[in-house]
Image (cartoon, rainbow, N blue to C red; front, side):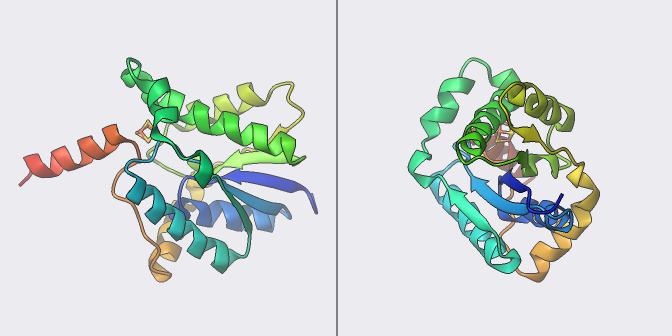
Length: 184
Ligand code: SF4
């Protein structure tokens, strides 16, 4: 497994901690990719990006930041009128881009920190990775990163890394704070 290059799509700093640890332990040369046009608003995108920069320094990995491609319309164009299935399209946008960058960069493998979260649709993400990478000359590395859920939380608290309060998109932000409003 030594020296295999892997592109790790990263949704945020805390979710990246455990997958980075595992991939390094497996002997991968890890490069991160921060591409998340779903995140709303821009300030939140920046907060999460800066938290990832902390993680990057602590765990010593390279990260590609696609700030130049951060545009909420990339996400919203795919979601509007399909809100009931929005997570599927949200994963699709990010994984498709990851595979495209992995191919161009001649990586051997790709994977995603979305497989770390207990709150995401794990099987949907796994199946999408398999489907989207078929016949693309890039291998999907699957691991159930949820096994390290507690480790990621402990480490992010230890290093005081920003932990977000909602999944990312405008809909999840609305649901999160509406609940807070109702519970007041
Ligand atoms: S809830 Fe999360 S995964 Fe689903 S569409 Fe919003 S940001 Fe994407």
